[in-house]
Image: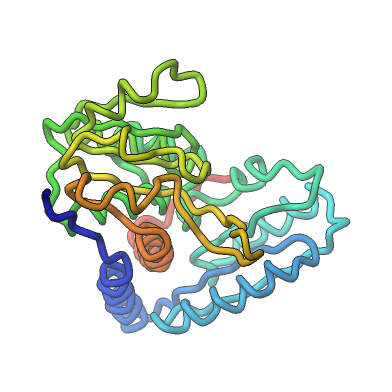
Length: 295
């Protein structure tokens, strides 16, 4: 049996954070302070824990973290007004809208209000649209993380038969576009795909981003394939404990796949590091291109 290579996402994350730190320092030397202004709507204890974690990660690379909280009763107009205020503020270089939002709030519509040059997650339609032409101002972080993993593993997508399972806006669709730009032959699978096995079994490169634990098993994998598991799911064990698993049955991949990403420790930490680097890149691009797209 072949030896499966397991990707160390934390090591890749460390390298990307170092890149972010260097860029932040360069910008500081030019008199530019890199910031990440996060908007949180509602009183979510989980959100507060996440915010503390974000603050520490930003501090690690020299980014100033600023949290803006609105009550769970906030109207969409209030959220838009805050985003527009941050868009206009020259001391704000990066904006992130913390999800989930309270029921009744159209989260994508709120994200679309963020200036594309300050949109550190790459979710504004301008950035998604520019990705179609291989030139986003800032690209979706999870999709960038997948491409960083392939680059680090020295996997050249050109000519590969690539199958992307899941066509969500932050992972599946943008990854499919990235792979097309890299000259892979891309098949996009989704909930309406009739025979998932037929597609995944022939993939040289399989990327799974569905949010369904255990979806991909050994029978779905072409021996020696590269398997990138984007899914992060919390499941309850028989003893009542919780653990994080991906969309892929990880143990099934050992000695079948040529390369596999674990969960946790794979795409997740790389995505976090990419977000930090994107925040620094946003500040750099604003310095170079002060033009703004008004929301």
